[in-house]
Image (tube, rainbow, N blue to C red; front, side, top):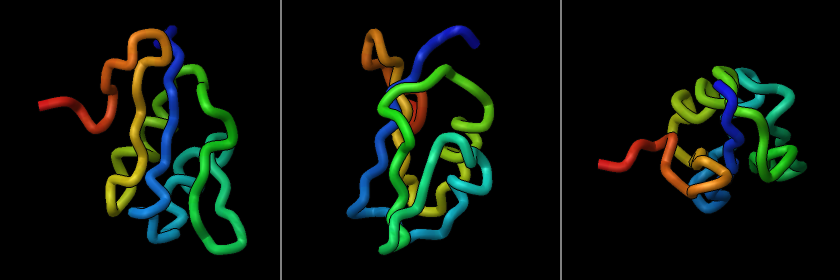
Length: 77
């Protein structure tokens, strides 16, 4: 893909399902309260991160292009 993505988790939405860790174990961790957080603020764009965001049951994960802030997921309407 070639781009870098900014990864954000809205912890007020996160229900701790662990789907993000299942899809992208190098991208996310769950803390002791089972709240998700990205391992790094930005990362190389990859299918695993996109799958994690797309499969979050409460859409708590947002991916944006690191250089422009353009939405990757969820897509802007």
